[in-house]
Picture 1 (cartoon, rainbow, N blue to C red):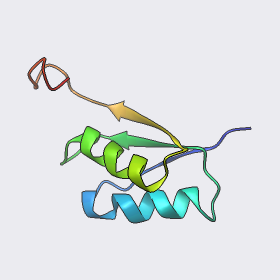
Picture 2 (picture 1 turned 90 degrees about the horizontal axis):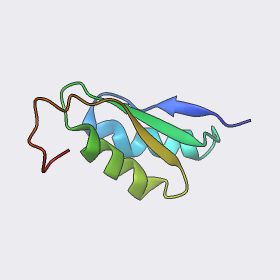
Picture 3 (picture 1 turned 135 degrees about the vertical axis):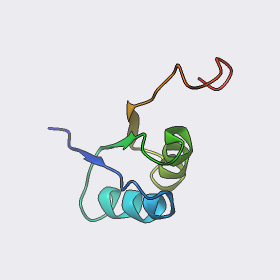
Length: 70
């Protein structure tokens, strides 16, 4: 069974959150929601911390961004 977790909304806690969930907690993946920060930046930080984890975005508003960003 795979287990996923939700990263904290604060971008400065993304690295610590991914490290805690991937390490002792043993989560297989993380979800990043769009709140006050760019979700792709949080996903990048999580990928650096836990390179073997599956990372996804829970919500990303595409219409508010340029096509190049999306």
